Length: 303
Picture 1: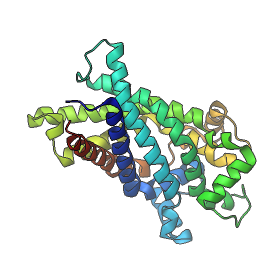
Picture 2: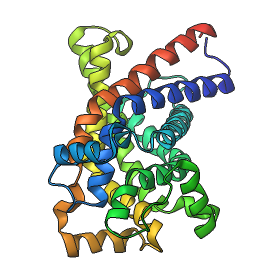
Picture 3: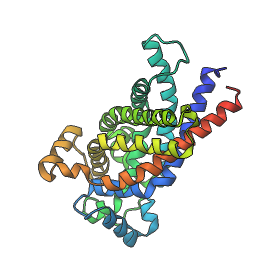
Picture 4: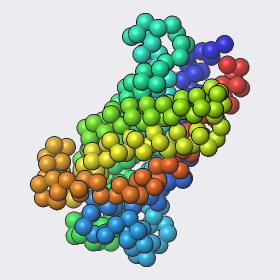
């Protein structure tokens, strides 16, 4: 028996939050390296150089800079994303005049995930702006874009945004976030579901019975597909959110074209290596935590 729609939404929300926590705890150092390389591509020769330099200059905690807003970002994003994902699946069924509760195809689930990402972008953008600024603060000071010796805490960044741009300042980079999320999450959910379907077919079982390792691999594969498709857009988003700390930053198209004109197209892929290394453990952990916590809560309410 299906639970009440409100209960179902709360279950999806809570399971998404659990997935967000697992994602951050398993991949934060790689995300820090990604943001540093996106915003200051000429400062580092590659991923290992960035990783080692950060460790030498500011210690291990430097690789975990921005963990608090990253947790807030991922918990809020994934909670809203997976709650919206469930609701958007119902919307897809309604648009296609399917019976409520009928299983969707992998492409239909990918479409629901793409639609759900619009809502999660609204929750993600403010916390990701704070996270990116914290992660790249050392480089901003070294490049002379901001004064040295500033306190770089979550609260100090929040106060700076409020003082200089007001509440709407937290939504700098929103356009590029939405442009990134819509195609990205189509690939994310589509690849995840397709991979699970393939495992289920070869193992002669259903999707829920494929086991932990195939489930984690499916999550990692979905994450890899997402980043390969949207990485240049994410690079532009990071530039807008970090460089706006030093003053007004141009919008998405001007920033995008400016990077290509002055630094070359390959600059848009700076930091891809740590991102691809991170995606399998981080997104594998995300879906493992999501699926198992959701299953536990569904069984608890008798669904």
